[in-house]
Length: 337
Image (tube, rainbow, N blue to C red; front, side, top):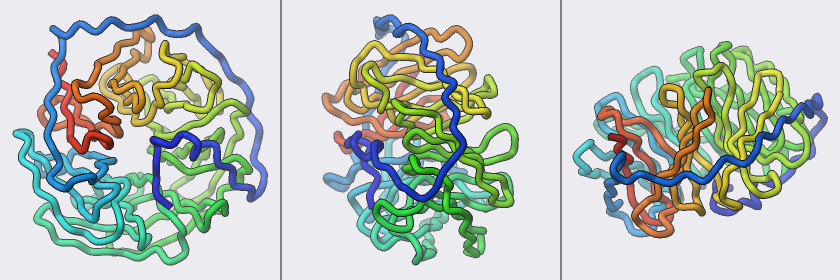
Protein backbone atom coordinates (compact mmCIF):
# COMPACT_ATOMS: atom_id res chain seq x y z
CA UNK A 1 0.00 0.00 0.00
CA UNK A 2 1.50 3.33 -1.03
CA UNK A 3 0.83 6.60 0.77
CA UNK A 4 -0.93 8.99 -1.58
CA UNK A 5 -1.97 12.18 0.11
CA UNK A 6 -2.90 13.60 -3.29
CA UNK A 7 -5.89 11.26 -3.29
CA UNK A 8 -7.85 12.53 -0.33
CA UNK A 9 -10.22 9.57 -0.49
CA UNK A 10 -7.57 7.46 1.22
CA UNK A 11 -8.15 9.41 4.40
CA UNK A 12 -11.74 8.26 4.45
CA UNK A 13 -10.77 4.59 4.63
CA UNK A 14 -12.01 2.75 7.72
CA UNK A 15 -10.47 -0.26 9.43
CA UNK A 16 -12.95 -2.17 11.56
CA UNK A 17 -10.95 -3.87 14.28
CA UNK A 18 -12.55 -2.93 17.58
CA UNK A 19 -13.71 0.04 19.53
CA UNK A 20 -12.18 3.11 21.06
CA UNK A 21 -13.17 5.78 23.53
CA UNK A 22 -15.28 8.57 22.08
CA UNK A 23 -14.21 12.21 22.37
CA UNK A 24 -16.43 14.66 20.57
CA UNK A 25 -15.31 17.96 22.09
CA UNK A 26 -14.81 20.04 18.96
CA UNK A 27 -14.49 23.80 18.66
CA UNK A 28 -14.71 25.58 15.32
CA UNK A 29 -13.31 29.06 14.92
CA UNK A 30 -14.34 31.42 12.10
CA UNK A 31 -12.68 30.95 8.73
CA UNK A 32 -9.27 32.59 8.70
CA UNK A 33 -9.20 35.73 6.52
CA UNK A 34 -7.44 35.39 3.16
CA UNK A 35 -3.76 36.14 3.36
CA UNK A 36 -2.24 38.60 0.92
CA UNK A 37 1.37 37.49 0.38
CA UNK A 38 4.02 40.17 0.56
CA UNK A 39 6.61 38.83 -1.87
CA UNK A 40 9.21 41.22 -0.46
CA UNK A 41 9.28 39.16 2.72
CA UNK A 42 10.06 35.77 1.16
CA UNK A 43 11.47 33.98 -1.85
CA UNK A 44 11.55 30.45 -3.22
CA UNK A 45 14.32 28.32 -4.64
CA UNK A 46 13.56 25.08 -6.49
CA UNK A 47 15.85 22.22 -7.54
CA UNK A 48 14.99 19.44 -10.01
CA UNK A 49 15.24 15.84 -8.80
CA UNK A 50 17.41 13.93 -11.34
CA UNK A 51 15.10 10.89 -11.65
CA UNK A 52 11.99 11.71 -13.73
CA UNK A 53 8.61 11.12 -12.08
CA UNK A 54 10.32 10.33 -8.76
CA UNK A 55 7.51 11.79 -6.64
CA UNK A 56 9.67 13.13 -3.77
CA UNK A 57 7.58 12.75 -0.64
CA UNK A 58 9.28 13.02 2.76
CA UNK A 59 12.24 15.22 3.73
CA UNK A 60 14.37 15.59 6.85
CA UNK A 61 17.44 17.54 7.91
CA UNK A 62 20.30 15.06 8.17
CA UNK A 63 23.14 14.91 10.69
CA UNK A 64 25.65 15.87 7.96
CA UNK A 65 24.37 19.37 7.23
CA UNK A 66 22.35 18.27 4.19
CA UNK A 67 18.70 17.40 3.53
CA UNK A 68 17.58 13.83 2.80
CA UNK A 69 14.38 12.88 1.01
CA UNK A 70 12.45 9.85 -0.19
CA UNK A 71 11.20 9.20 -3.71
CA UNK A 72 7.72 7.72 -3.63
CA UNK A 73 7.78 6.32 -7.18
CA UNK A 74 11.48 5.53 -7.54
CA UNK A 75 13.84 3.17 -5.67
CA UNK A 76 16.03 5.99 -4.35
CA UNK A 77 16.74 8.10 -1.31
CA UNK A 78 18.08 11.53 -2.22
CA UNK A 79 20.51 13.92 -0.56
CA UNK A 80 20.58 17.63 -1.31
CA UNK A 81 23.06 20.08 0.16
CA UNK A 82 22.20 23.69 0.95
CA UNK A 83 23.61 24.74 -2.43
CA UNK A 84 21.16 22.51 -4.29
CA UNK A 85 23.49 19.68 -5.31
CA UNK A 86 21.58 16.38 -5.36
CA UNK A 87 22.90 12.82 -5.00
CA UNK A 88 20.58 9.81 -5.29
CA UNK A 89 21.24 6.50 -3.53
CA UNK A 90 19.59 3.35 -4.94
CA UNK A 91 17.92 1.51 -2.06
CA UNK A 92 15.59 -0.95 -3.82
CA UNK A 93 11.85 -1.34 -3.52
CA UNK A 94 9.22 0.25 -5.69
CA UNK A 95 9.30 3.50 -3.77
CA UNK A 96 10.35 5.05 -0.49
CA UNK A 97 7.83 6.69 1.82
CA UNK A 98 8.79 8.47 5.05
CA UNK A 99 12.22 9.27 6.47
CA UNK A 100 13.65 10.27 9.87
CA UNK A 101 17.03 10.55 11.59
CA UNK A 102 17.75 7.82 14.10
CA UNK A 103 19.63 7.92 17.41
CA UNK A 104 22.59 6.37 15.57
CA UNK A 105 22.69 9.42 13.25
CA UNK A 106 21.64 7.32 10.26
CA UNK A 107 18.66 7.86 7.98
CA UNK A 108 15.75 5.48 8.60
CA UNK A 109 12.93 5.19 6.09
CA UNK A 110 9.88 3.09 5.27
CA UNK A 111 9.82 1.29 1.95
CA UNK A 112 7.09 0.03 -0.32
CA UNK A 113 7.05 -3.38 -2.05
CA UNK A 114 8.73 -5.15 -0.48
CA UNK A 115 7.61 -3.68 2.82
CA UNK A 116 10.76 -2.89 4.73
CA UNK A 117 12.51 -0.37 6.93
CA UNK A 118 15.80 0.88 5.52
CA UNK A 119 18.81 2.27 7.33
CA UNK A 120 21.15 4.43 5.28
CA UNK A 121 24.38 5.97 6.51
CA UNK A 122 25.38 9.42 5.34
CA UNK A 123 28.07 7.75 3.23
CA UNK A 124 25.53 5.56 1.44
CA UNK A 125 25.79 2.19 3.22
CA UNK A 126 22.38 0.51 3.18
CA UNK A 127 20.84 -2.07 5.52
CA UNK A 128 17.31 -3.32 4.90
CA UNK A 129 15.00 -4.91 7.47
CA UNK A 130 12.03 -6.72 5.95
CA UNK A 131 8.69 -6.31 7.71
CA UNK A 132 6.98 -9.58 6.78
CA UNK A 133 3.80 -9.10 8.80
CA UNK A 134 2.83 -5.86 7.08
CA UNK A 135 0.88 -4.99 3.97
CA UNK A 136 2.02 -1.40 4.06
CA UNK A 137 4.13 0.98 6.16
CA UNK A 138 3.56 4.64 6.85
CA UNK A 139 5.20 7.43 8.87
CA UNK A 140 8.35 6.79 10.93
CA UNK A 141 9.78 8.76 13.85
CA UNK A 142 12.56 8.50 16.41
CA UNK A 143 10.96 7.49 19.70
CA UNK A 144 11.87 8.59 23.22
CA UNK A 145 13.57 5.20 23.83
CA UNK A 146 16.24 5.12 21.07
CA UNK A 147 14.02 3.05 18.80
CA UNK A 148 12.38 4.00 15.51
CA UNK A 149 8.58 3.78 15.60
CA UNK A 150 6.35 3.42 12.57
CA UNK A 151 2.78 2.62 11.57
CA UNK A 152 2.07 -0.72 9.92
CA UNK A 153 -1.06 -2.01 8.20
CA UNK A 154 -1.41 -5.80 8.35
CA UNK A 155 -3.51 -6.05 5.20
CA UNK A 156 -5.73 -3.94 2.99
CA UNK A 157 -8.66 -2.72 5.10
CA UNK A 158 -7.20 -4.74 7.98
CA UNK A 159 -5.86 -3.93 11.44
CA UNK A 160 -3.22 -1.29 12.05
CA UNK A 161 -0.26 -1.87 14.33
CA UNK A 162 2.43 0.35 15.80
CA UNK A 163 5.89 -1.18 15.37
CA UNK A 164 9.27 -0.31 16.86
CA UNK A 165 12.71 -1.26 15.60
CA UNK A 166 16.00 -0.93 17.45
CA UNK A 167 19.17 0.33 15.82
CA UNK A 168 20.40 -3.28 15.51
CA UNK A 169 17.21 -4.34 13.77
CA UNK A 170 15.22 -5.98 16.59
CA UNK A 171 11.52 -5.50 15.80
CA UNK A 172 8.55 -5.38 18.18
CA UNK A 173 4.92 -5.06 17.17
CA UNK A 174 2.24 -3.43 19.36
CA UNK A 175 -1.49 -3.40 18.90
CA UNK A 176 -3.61 -3.63 16.92
CA UNK A 177 -4.80 -0.09 17.36
CA UNK A 178 -8.20 -0.39 19.03
CA UNK A 179 -10.24 1.84 16.81
CA UNK A 180 -12.97 1.37 14.23
CA UNK A 181 -12.06 4.61 12.48
CA UNK A 182 -8.30 4.46 12.17
CA UNK A 183 -6.26 4.85 9.00
CA UNK A 184 -2.57 5.49 9.73
CA UNK A 185 -1.07 8.68 8.34
CA UNK A 186 1.15 10.38 10.91
CA UNK A 187 3.10 9.85 14.14
CA UNK A 188 5.09 12.19 16.40
CA UNK A 189 6.57 12.38 19.90
CA UNK A 190 4.76 14.52 22.44
CA UNK A 191 6.19 16.59 25.25
CA UNK A 192 4.69 14.03 27.65
CA UNK A 193 7.20 11.39 26.51
CA UNK A 194 4.63 9.35 24.59
CA UNK A 195 4.13 8.82 20.89
CA UNK A 196 0.98 10.19 19.27
CA UNK A 197 -0.47 8.90 16.02
CA UNK A 198 -3.31 10.23 13.90
CA UNK A 199 -5.38 8.78 11.12
CA UNK A 200 -8.91 9.28 9.93
CA UNK A 201 -10.91 10.64 12.85
CA UNK A 202 -8.74 9.00 15.53
CA UNK A 203 -5.95 10.03 17.87
CA UNK A 204 -3.84 7.32 19.51
CA UNK A 205 -1.38 7.56 22.40
CA UNK A 206 1.40 4.99 22.47
CA UNK A 207 3.61 4.71 25.55
CA UNK A 208 7.27 3.65 25.14
CA UNK A 209 6.18 0.30 26.59
CA UNK A 210 3.73 -0.12 23.70
CA UNK A 211 0.43 0.49 25.50
CA UNK A 212 -2.02 2.02 23.03
CA UNK A 213 -5.01 4.20 23.87
CA UNK A 214 -7.18 5.44 21.00
CA UNK A 215 -9.74 8.21 20.95
CA UNK A 216 -12.50 8.65 18.40
CA UNK A 217 -12.65 12.40 17.77
CA UNK A 218 -16.02 12.22 16.05
CA UNK A 219 -17.35 12.49 12.50
CA UNK A 220 -16.22 15.06 9.97
CA UNK A 221 -12.53 14.76 10.84
CA UNK A 222 -9.78 13.39 8.59
CA UNK A 223 -6.35 13.83 10.15
CA UNK A 224 -3.04 13.17 8.45
CA UNK A 225 0.49 14.32 9.35
CA UNK A 226 0.85 15.51 12.96
CA UNK A 227 3.41 17.56 14.88
CA UNK A 228 3.96 18.69 18.47
CA UNK A 229 3.32 22.40 18.95
CA UNK A 230 5.16 24.79 21.22
CA UNK A 231 1.84 25.52 22.96
CA UNK A 232 1.68 21.96 24.35
CA UNK A 233 -0.94 20.79 21.85
CA UNK A 234 -0.73 18.58 18.81
CA UNK A 235 -1.34 20.12 15.38
CA UNK A 236 -2.49 18.25 12.29
CA UNK A 237 -3.95 18.84 8.86
CA UNK A 238 -7.63 17.96 8.55
CA UNK A 239 -9.01 17.18 5.10
CA UNK A 240 -12.27 15.39 5.83
CA UNK A 241 -14.12 18.24 7.48
CA UNK A 242 -16.81 19.79 5.24
CA UNK A 243 -15.18 22.63 3.28
CA UNK A 244 -13.35 24.69 4.18
CA UNK A 245 -10.55 22.40 5.38
CA UNK A 246 -8.68 23.17 8.56
CA UNK A 247 -5.54 23.05 10.63
CA UNK A 248 -6.50 21.33 13.87
CA UNK A 249 -5.21 22.09 17.34
CA UNK A 250 -5.65 18.94 19.43
CA UNK A 251 -5.14 18.51 23.17
CA UNK A 252 -3.84 15.27 24.64
CA UNK A 253 -7.34 14.75 25.96
CA UNK A 254 -8.80 14.79 22.47
CA UNK A 255 -10.31 18.29 22.36
CA UNK A 256 -10.15 19.55 18.77
CA UNK A 257 -10.15 23.19 17.63
CA UNK A 258 -10.60 23.69 13.90
CA UNK A 259 -8.82 26.66 12.32
CA UNK A 260 -10.56 26.81 8.96
CA UNK A 261 -8.62 27.90 5.89
CA UNK A 262 -10.07 30.41 3.42
CA UNK A 263 -9.66 28.01 0.47
CA UNK A 264 -12.27 25.30 0.04
CA UNK A 265 -9.98 22.40 -0.87
CA UNK A 266 -6.29 23.16 -0.29
CA UNK A 267 -5.61 19.49 0.60
CA UNK A 268 -3.57 20.20 3.72
CA UNK A 269 -0.72 17.77 4.32
CA UNK A 270 2.72 18.24 5.88
CA UNK A 271 2.96 20.16 9.16
CA UNK A 272 6.08 21.59 10.80
CA UNK A 273 6.56 23.53 14.03
CA UNK A 274 9.10 26.37 14.04
CA UNK A 275 9.12 28.81 16.94
CA UNK A 276 5.53 29.83 17.65
CA UNK A 277 4.28 28.96 14.16
CA UNK A 278 2.93 25.87 12.45
CA UNK A 279 3.88 25.64 8.79
CA UNK A 280 1.96 23.34 6.46
CA UNK A 281 1.64 22.42 2.81
CA UNK A 282 -1.44 22.92 0.64
CA UNK A 283 -1.14 20.19 -1.99
CA UNK A 284 -3.91 21.41 -4.28
CA UNK A 285 -3.64 25.03 -3.22
CA UNK A 286 0.03 24.94 -4.31
CA UNK A 287 1.14 26.99 -1.32
CA UNK A 288 2.99 26.84 1.96
CA UNK A 289 0.83 28.16 4.78
CA UNK A 290 1.54 29.17 8.35
CA UNK A 291 -0.52 29.88 11.45
CA UNK A 292 0.66 31.45 14.70
CA UNK A 293 -0.11 29.18 17.67
CA UNK A 294 -1.03 32.13 19.91
CA UNK A 295 -2.57 34.80 17.70
CA UNK A 296 -3.75 32.45 14.91
CA UNK A 297 -2.45 34.93 12.35
CA UNK A 298 -2.48 33.20 8.97
CA UNK A 299 -0.11 33.58 6.01
CA UNK A 300 0.33 31.86 2.66
CA UNK A 301 3.30 31.62 0.32
CA UNK A 302 2.43 30.70 -3.33
CA UNK A 303 4.91 28.28 -4.91
CA UNK A 304 6.29 29.45 -8.30
CA UNK A 305 5.95 26.10 -10.12
CA UNK A 306 2.29 25.50 -11.05
CA UNK A 307 0.77 22.31 -9.64
CA UNK A 308 3.95 21.53 -7.69
CA UNK A 309 2.10 19.38 -5.16
CA UNK A 310 4.05 20.32 -1.99
CA UNK A 311 4.46 17.34 0.34
CA UNK A 312 6.31 17.46 3.67
CA UNK A 313 8.55 20.10 5.20
CA UNK A 314 11.61 20.34 7.42
CA UNK A 315 13.82 23.10 8.76
CA UNK A 316 17.20 23.07 7.06
CA UNK A 317 20.59 23.74 8.65
CA UNK A 318 20.48 27.13 6.92
CA UNK A 319 17.33 28.07 8.86
CA UNK A 320 15.12 27.92 5.76
CA UNK A 321 12.09 25.71 5.18
CA UNK A 322 12.79 22.85 2.77
CA UNK A 323 9.97 20.84 1.23
CA UNK A 324 9.22 18.24 -1.41
CA UNK A 325 7.27 18.97 -4.60
CA UNK A 326 5.68 15.62 -5.44
CA UNK A 327 4.02 16.63 -8.69
CA UNK A 328 6.77 18.99 -9.80
CA UNK A 329 9.61 16.52 -9.04
CA UNK A 330 11.52 19.23 -7.23
CA UNK A 331 12.92 20.08 -3.83
CA UNK A 332 11.80 23.55 -2.79
CA UNK A 333 13.16 26.07 -0.32
CA UNK A 334 11.12 28.82 1.32
CA UNK A 335 13.39 31.64 2.47
CA UNK A 336 11.75 33.99 4.96
CA UNK A 337 13.45 37.38 5.14
